[in-house]
Length: 49
Image (cartoon, rainbow, N blue to C red):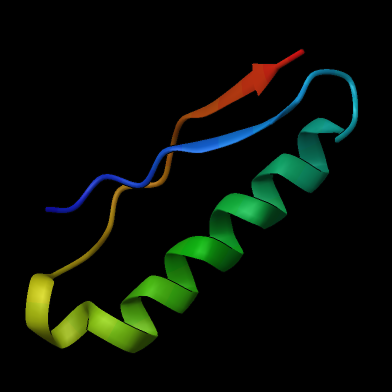
């Protein structure tokens, strides 16, 4: 299963917005490569300063 690492600036996105980003990235990846590589894991999000 591919892993997607999402990094955002600290304090910019609310927890709800982060959840929407993760959901959107996971859906987009599955739409493009889902049948080839299986589901993606985009559960973690790191904050960068």
